[in-house]
Image (cartoon, rainbow, N blue to C red):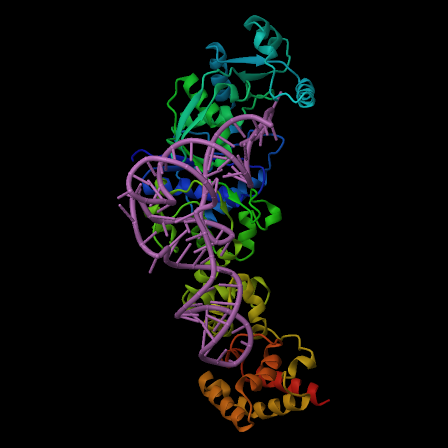
Length: 488
RNA sequence: GCCUCCUUCGUCUAGUGGUUAGGACACAAGAUUCUCAAUCUUGUAACACGGGUUCGAGCCCCGUAGGAGGUACCA
């Protein structure tokens, strides 16, 4: 396949949806796989829903995900402008041409009349749709009404002939002419195009070769094909991607969980993990392999491995991907990320001090396989960088034991801590193990009060390494404080 | 209601006429273990149903059922 030109064309109404990211990803991958171009186009044709923040969010998420674009509003290109609100004359021009050639007409029906019509049709249990009243207006009459300043829309004249086209993943799609929407609006009364007109005009002018979009567009694809044909323009190849569903089988929405890319980003997801997971929702490489970098996907992606059926978004599996990617970081890489998170949480200074760096390096291997999300790190590391709020006394006491046993363990442990800054954590561990044995305690029970005293929690990263990161003096102070609590 | 699309373990999927139907997530059990994780081993679990075609069907055809999407001067 050569000469691939694809695009991502979101409408800036809100935060980028996870489904949008996947559409962008597949477009991007197709372009990269075949050495083509991937461009961005802003479909801001609905003035009532326009949200300027959405455009920034779009750039943010695409950059975060690592998808770069060759042309777009921010970087120009040979087919600009790439913002539809700046292309209004173009749409008007093609709409006028359709009128001139007998494929469209002006309609002066008011929105009120249309709602009345619709409610009447519903009451009578009739199929809904425009009644084509303005079709009978002569061109002269229509011209006159328009010149007098009457607001109007431009509607497409729906033909009765059946329409068929080839979808690259679904195969042949056919629709009887009578089942097509009746004379859909192409140009709205505010002078903005509807999606249909804008899509056809722009994807022709911008020389799009493949239209990859969500399957919810499938029902209107026959209309688009008709428009291309009426205008005498070559049809692009259509690729309708399977929908992303929530766990109940309905279209993924907020009640299923996070849906905007920003939410995933803020929840501590790694872009590489999200992208990898998304690539596998509706596409597969063919074998058993599941982990791919973006660069690998760019080489492997192909249209014929795209799936037909909708897929349920599995948050659990995404979490697993994220945790796996986290474990893939080297210790220095992870230490740097930990410091970033810790500083965001106000636990460390920015830039980090040498001492903090050393602590992060000591903790990195200990938390690596315990993290699912990067933003869990501050909670796990708080006791290293700051003083934990002391746990309730009851927490210090082992399950099979009393306050006295806990106190005696702490008393036995405090002297062992002396000099630990100069020892390896393994050496300290040996001392602790010997003492536990001497007291006839299992290491797990023995460590319980120590863990709670030092970390402030019953669950913590491995103690010996952690104590090294906390430092002898602070460890000792915490152990002594806990001992006092128990003996008072 | 009408139109269109879809249908392999609970979920994501491999499979392109001959397989003990494979992998991953989740779940369960065990091992390991200073807590929690991670890791390792094992296990439960699927071709929606009914007809054809064929020596042979998860794979091809036709129905049925179920699910989803669409039905706007929204995209």
